[in-house]
Image (cartoon, rainbow, N blue to C red):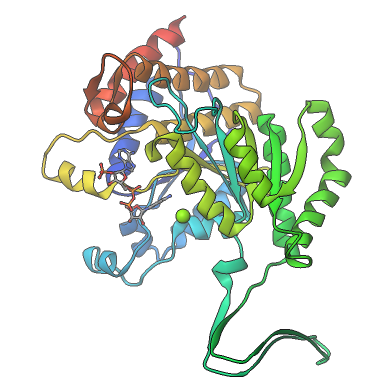
Length: 404
Ligand code: NAP
Ligand code: MG
């Protein structure tokens, strides 16, 4: 069989631990035999981040901006234990945070649905994609413990020194206080990423805040979304037959539970943090969750939502057999290659991505899966496989599909 050709490279960001092992298996078994892969490789493994003083992460994010499509392996975000384990020069920042800041992007998370792993919510038939604004609010708040009576105010000091004040509270007892902020350009980027991703994936977009209570803060989010929608996206949405709609967060939660899925739910930072864990769990498996970072000008970075699966890696290092689920990482590759195919008008590459996803899902639905899914699957006949056995089973099916 002739290998499928590419014209522009994708940016490949390698990572850590068990997912780094899966990364190589996926490339060797599922990609390289079929695709003449063009990629610009960046090693984001913790050792190399330490060696390059984390410059490699910055370089990889800039490359993603340049080429427009990246695929990333899960990486360790160092904590004190990791600094010791890897003898690090510094407790390097989260690579995902660094990449997100450089690409100014929004993260979209969506579950992969398979027969046998049913959502806990009976009505859900299609994936629900959560878009989380990843800047500000609670995550950059200043807080104070108020020891006793007195008043707390918000004070804005303009560049000319003039002050505007807003009373937070007159305290008659001890209490607590919090100051949050956000930025108009960040909210605008968030809105544009959401609208363009909705258009790309042809799904409705829902957005919800608590604007009835938060008349300036949350209301600003609502107004910015509406204004950008009306001025920049309305026509395209109508042409694509999709809808943007805004509602209160409490109403959104009720509608989501009663819906059949198949839309994007845009959330403020905290709501997205909480709701994405709720939605992921309710769909059945963290290992089946995809994640894509989208910049407001349509640059994409694909990855799995889970981490490096450290516990399995230590088993692997001891020479024990592992059964780690590679589905979300495979879908990161298929997502990136399909996107590259769309941008460069390569129908063979797009078809390959479709076949890879279909081969993966059909393998599981035929009963061949890793142990995490075997534990929850309701299929009558299940064959649990090792990490490598599962990828090889997909490769067999993929070969058949591509030859058809
Ligand atoms: P994790 O790697 O997601 O794994 C947590 C547990 O979930 C695993 O021990 C495993 O359960 C299960 N699991 C997750 N993915 C699985 C898969 N593909 N197949 C089978 N089981 C899977 O989270 P963590 O252990 O909290 O974090 C490990 C490292 O990953 C940390 O250093 C963290 O910084 C990093 N991390 C990176 C990213 C990222 O790069 N996007 C995201 C999150 C965390 P059992 O052990 O019960 O089998
Ligand atoms: Mg969370």
